[in-house]
Length: 293
Image (cartoon, rainbow, N blue to C red; front, top):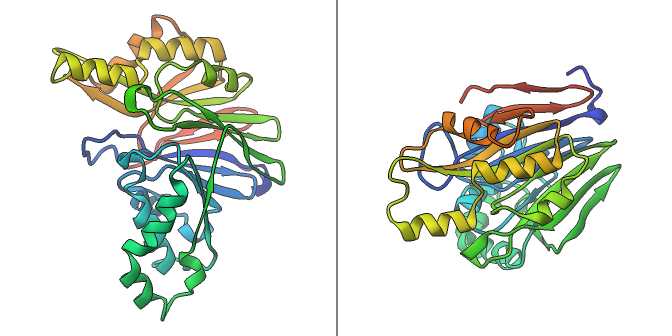
């Protein structure tokens, strides 16, 4: 608030939901404004609508980062890409879009234009073709972006039994830092990469009542995601100035309000259960502003 534009470090949770459709929680997607850059991490259902709500044209987005290739994290990408290209109601995108992600990202970015070939052919008569170009960068653990003091580091996480490459991201800028966990079960590598950070945005899952549809489903979900009790250990060992829950995977009657009491058994620090359009400004003080979804 009141910072010069080059000092900005802001996280906006565009979507905090999990696969079941919800009008309150759209699919997982996070906007990070840092220095002169504006990045989107993952693009779940409704990412374009949420970006529109915060008043940022997709033409201004510096690039996309994908944590992994589960459909709930990418299904909103074609909407961001193509609606952002034609640009209504704001200025249309005229530059190629860089997309960083795990193995398979290059294949996805090569085949999406084939799937939308007719749309691209027709609209290219009226819109700059360069604005629809996708430039894939397949990542491994380490620094994947560095410019003007903004450093984005990818690190491997453990999406359990899903057997697909999955990454979290750390963003550093002017002695401030934030980590986005992506989808992961309890993970020591995430803890190593989250030392000395200001904000940790972490996924969570919880079951209530009879739990999942079956014992096998409960076992599978627990192997892929992080319970509040496990997240408490992560928060305790990383000691962020603010911990935030996102990607709420709740089933069997579990509710948002159950997450904090379960976490408090082992962690007493600052903690917020994220909602769509929650804005987090990282400065000398960390401030949060609730959006209207």
